[in-house]
Image 1: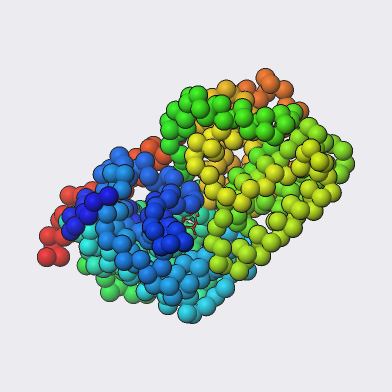
Image 2: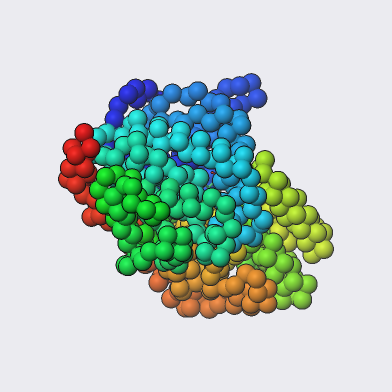
Length: 494
Ligand code: G6P
């Protein structure tokens, strides 16, 4: 780990979290561990390929960590105070935007104190990015925690090419319009040259918000901004007119890395050991999620418990392994969810478990990728039952892992992945009977059908990997605002 000093970078990624979190042992000794969630998993290979700088938070409040290099990545920490963590991260990001953008599965809190902190922290991130980006460089801002950064950054550095990618859904206008600061959020995003979404429907929802709020047309997903000072319509944030494009770019995974891991004999041996440790049941069902109310973990448990109650599944022959990695544990809705889930696990196991077998094997931990791949290999049925999810990379990871063309993916139509993974068993998780039918279909599916479906799914994920995602996005960004025009703009502004 070395100090990167005051270097400038042509390519800068800005996200709330860095790819590593600082963890402090009881005696205060610091170490680093991979951050949770799909965003950093997807972006890490992109950063390695582009040799850029990554601006983000270390996951610890009041951390004075200076820029450093870890594993060949240039990391530039943004310091968040304990108050900022509470109001900006736990508050506005995860108690307002997160539930609102996931179709109000939980009630969003609209707090002016949260909002003020969100504005201040977004300004902090914009300033940090402005400081490390080279003249005419490209800055790629990530996710819902930083929706004001594109505009703030453009005001600080009009020479930059700015992209934004939203990893979570963008809600229908009927819901989005609840947000007291909806205008500021849309104006913030319009600071970018290209705004990427997971699904076509998300881009459509955003464009509709633009049309409704500003009474303009958005032909072909393009928003034409006039020069500064022209009416209520948000100005281009420069003295020249400017185009912004909103479009879907479904994110993916580093599929090759998964394929390589499957070939590792140690991982394969571990998969076998997991099966043996579970008593080599006929069917292993698997759920892997951050412990989040968007993931539909309860719905999956309800369906499974009913199948046990009806004798359609038997604990002597089936087990459900549920990995629920700890997440946002200081936010009340998440605490309540954990209690609820753990109560259900206790009930289902108490009711249907035997001395030899528990019905649900529940693990509240995060695991390294090798262990995840071993679990994917061991699992006959993968359950992704999200009530709403931007993409759900776990679905793609499972598919990438199954080089044996086996295993069945049960996938919620409310996860972005459903747009691409059409050969999965697609379900509506609210329809418990439908979910139960799909689970039984998965358990009884013939080897031939499993093979046909998995082959098609794998083909999709291996071809449309994360490298292609970032290439598509960055090429589209360069096409909207080539660097030459960024240079010209900078020259005019000088
Ligand atoms: C999702 C979000 C990411 C976030 C991750 C983990 O994938 O899209 O922005 O980093 O969850 O959540 P956390 O709050 O722990 O960063």
